[in-house]
Image 1 (tube, rainbow, N blue to C red):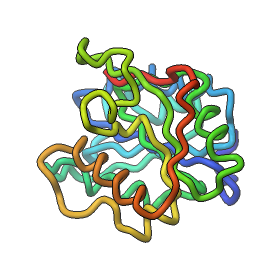
Image 2 (cartoon, one colour):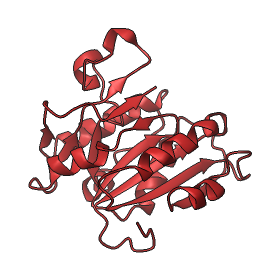
Image 3 (cartoon, helix red, strand yellow):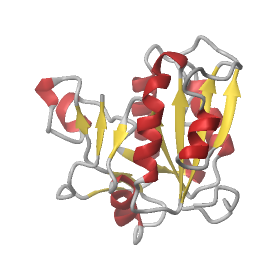
Image 4 (cartoon, rainbow, N blue to C red):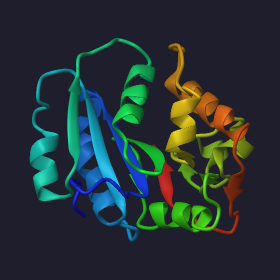
Length: 204
């Protein structure tokens, strides 16, 4: 994948990295390197203006997968600012978010593409595993299990997400903001979810 050729990218994947979670970044990058669907660009947004140590994304990406890396001054907010910044940088037709401590399996993007290939402009939902809570383990997507949609579940049309300004004022919990973003888009676009697809990501 050549991240300089972004004009016709199908997906934009955005990873938000916070210094306490930097140790998970090598695993996240490796999981993206192993994606069977390769038509995507990767953007890494780091909270803070100081290069991370010891897990510097620039060094890691030279060893794993190319990415555009942006450092942002710490905002001490729930993260909507970083979500909106990711939207402003994206070139793909659809945008997805991945936290540094999440894990995606090789078919994560492939499953999203299968949902969207003949449903242009729709929202894709894939099945993930929510590892933190044993009560909901294996009962996915998250919305059906505990009333929320996790950012790993969905891919949003970039044009729609941008036009709706889906990440508005700061909220107390970023996960709630992700759910509201999905909900806003779902009012304007069909939602495609293949319940038979295998679980393709894990939110720790």
